[in-house]
Image (cartoon, rainbow, N blue to C red):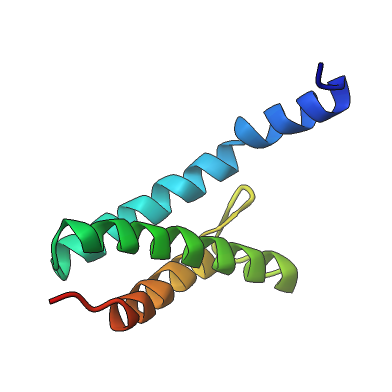
Length: 98
């Protein structure tokens, strides 16, 4: 049986609105980028992964820096978007197909 403290912490993370908003935005950015620079279904998965990792990195940097402008709740919209766009471009340059 999982101790109540661990279960409560896990449920807090899983049901965090900020987490799901971040995931939703990262996937939307990835799909838009992939649609714009279409390179096949294999690249779509890589773009989504790059968008998620980039948004997470931007979120982390924005939180560590303490930048409050462009935030929605706990989500660092400005830094997350910049991180996603940057990693999408770098990922596409590294993972060229065809």
